Image (cartoon, rainbow, N blue to C red; front, side, top):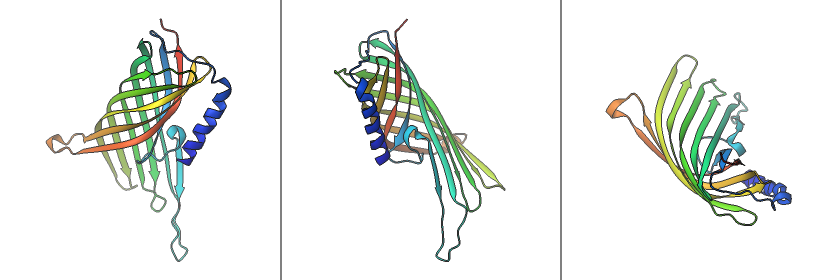
Length: 220
């Protein structure tokens, strides 16, 4: 979290010389952006833009050690929207995630991929220098988990549904681009596929911080 706080400070500092610029949120405009999420808790080991690499190594009291465990994770969220009226936009957002972990002791691999798409709605409250907003979003998709021990493989598939929302701020960088930062809550429901009535469900609630950039265009 210290990295996130530092990054936000740096971005605000960079944006300060042009913060007098102001993007507009007029009816008929189009917005396109990409962001990612840093979970305050969860399994997607990640940093800014949710691109994360990690390596850990165990050393016993006798000095015996194994090769390091390694993991990589990335989550991106491209979105596009249209302003139905001044300050109110709606559209679609895609969530694509990938996580891989390799056990340094026996080289077992765990790979998880996730994809979902769904609608969102956002309302801006323009101010002189920054633009607070509130957003509500939904998502429908699937996740696949794969375990590979070298001698055997197992695979599990899940359908997912999510609902979430949060509040944030858009910091203008010029008159067409804004840096977005939004803190919010997301509730996900995972359901096992291909298991009929015995399919299990898992429900997860998590808080996270979305950050990214949005570009605004004149409408048609």
